[in-house]
Image 1 (tube, chains in turn green, orange):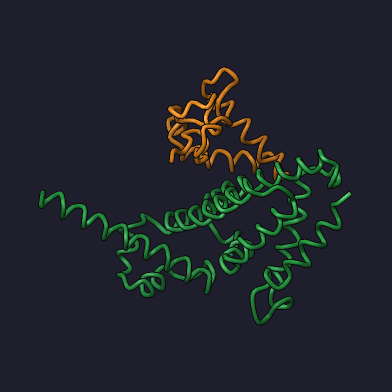
Image 2 (image 1 turned 135 degrees about the vertical axis):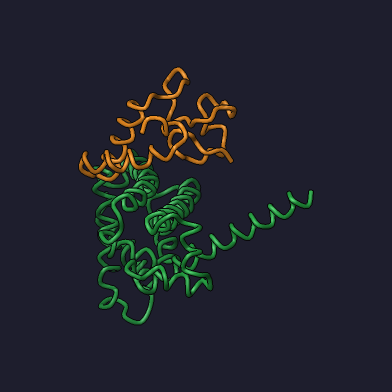
Length: 198
Length: 80
């Protein structure tokens, strides 16, 4: 029993340290970009550099776990809200709320994606497919009702993301002192709806 | 909560399961009309088509994204 208990405790400690490394990596990459060294993550997390690689076999594995976790949680948030959402307008609003909660890290992903290993880029793209699916479903419903224009749903989705990403890319011009999405969310949503409504 | 072994989708409600059968380990989207699970090639083709339709990506990128996701799923690990 004692051995079993000790093992569980060690296991819990191990999981806690792993989570701490992931949480710290999220913050360090968000603040410094994906070029930040793992030694910096270890220092910020208060663990040895070697400890990072006892929890993750390689930098790629750390990035893979981090980005997959981030992408999956974004997709789950969208999925839950999309199931309650009845209209494109509500979905757009909720999408902006969710992105604004993660604005800094999401911006890093958009602007520095090419710095990540290909596998990690594919992993993130895969999680985003779920989000595209929910957009596609709700766009189709409104196209069928005749409330929005009959434009291929992937173009509606790309156009919407294109607007948001342009503001994120140029945040220093659009909102140098604070978050860009919350500042422009109404304008982005209203403009997009004006463009697509029948 | 179960996760579909063939696509990774969380399965929360009976409507997520083929024929509402919550004992199944795969979701309604990974089932054939007769309720059996799609093959690797069928799932690959439908996933690639899905990515292209919803996001408009080039087919070669859609294949890479689909295979990268499939290789981590219990149903397809043996295919890689």
